[in-house]
Image (cartoon, rainbow, N blue to C red):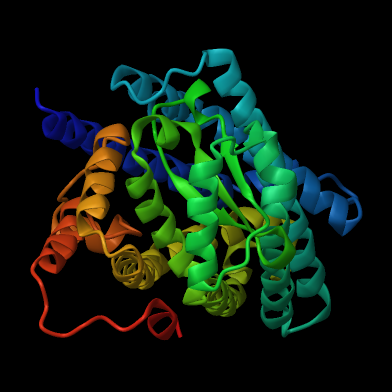
Length: 377
């Protein structure tokens, strides 16, 4: 079986397992909701609303996690190990999942408490909740490289001074201020490779997987980083946060209308009734499915622009193509999914389409390219 065939099989199985996981989750929430389980779990007299919300959220979340645990093991551990992507020991893989679940669960619970608190006091809850959560997203963007990434990776300063200066010089030419270059020990978990520019302002830093350093020559690493720099030059982090905020605002507004329409039919005392938590979760899940293709379309447009910037900044289409080929091999990427699949599921253009874009630049153009600083503006 060729590498391309293996990638196709891997992604086909991952897709159908994801669909099955989604169906199981919807069925679980629907059963809890229409079976009145959340109402029966509510004690009489009910506890304070915030404790009621927290207790139901924890019970519902644990129930779903136990129900989908076999799927998570197959999708996240067994299949990646079978296809050579993952070599992390099972115990460490479980510990990473526990840390991610605890962190994500705590943030989700804070968001739920905020939403239900606002539901009790204001008909404009959807606006205020979206604004506060938007502010939280900005804060997370700032603190992720400082507090969250080190929970999952050991970070060390890049020791290769020649490569470090090359990457810092590229950042300076692009007009992006960074505080340094760090290396994450991805190799102890997986063979996958990547680079990132994480943080905002005083926390912005270059982050390289050690697998990238081991497998890629300097000019290809530079090409990968140039793509990441483009997101900051173009203000994609800011634009992405604004799009995320707009989607959140629209989602909450529609969710509020649906809650008002359906809560009476389900025997709930109102939209703020904690027993309606499964309904709220189901509404958010379905609205997220509707919004996902729109968000992915915006993301693919942004990624194409970043590829164009990287090619103009490095003036080395061959290095860009080489980097894409290595990324496809190491990450077992599906090189050319169907247009329909790419439209609904992909946040990046497919590898082959990105390579085709670079190959078009290999032919000399009669028009000279503008300087990097002008193009970046």
